[in-house]
Image 1 (tube, rainbow, N blue to C red):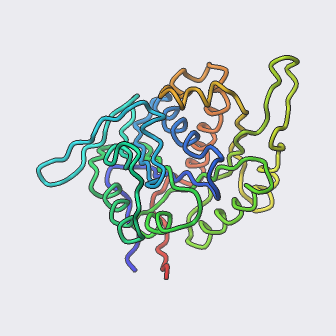
Image 2 (cartoon, one colour):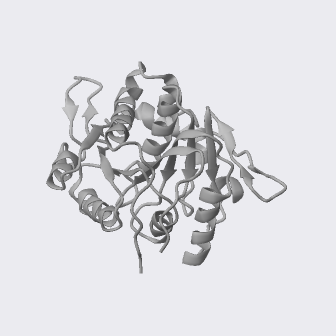
Length: 271
């Protein structure tokens, strides 16, 4: 199998993954991309969750991407990001009922046929789990590293272990774990309430020798930002609701620097 190739012009390719749905993976991916842009970087975002493409909702856009004469795709520009999503190509409530080969085709197009230009970071929001889209991505392109998102609950952590093992089996560096919905500050007394538990993501990361990139609290402003198309990262690093997300972002940048910011990885054969 030929060596996985980087995307021309893209310095760092970061996959955001989760073992299961409902842990806030897309929220982390969108705010990570926006925070990187706010910190002065050129950033792109691929919504590779073709069955649940929620990135356009979170960024408040339904603009359709344009095509060039040679059938390349021009990504939509929103909030300083270049973005592509199946949600822009298949708007509305019609479900995507696709098998593996069709998924392979669309993910390959998003990687190879979109005119990304020069980017410091290209963030990929993967679907939850360890299925066809993840394997297509890993086979097709050289990934700088993966960020695994979880909540502290035992059920979520069981699936995190599978996600970490998947990336390790195919020689993709797991840059670290983000524990989302980590704790909740009571609005009345200010004391932390561990609704889903707390710190279990860090324990799992340590057990696998993987860094913990940060903990993101349960904050209604984070949820409202995503629901209204105005994610909290757009408010800047000093906004109270965005501080932990910027902390995660800076940890990702530091890890990439530590890993040498290389998008070239060893080739792997996947049966």
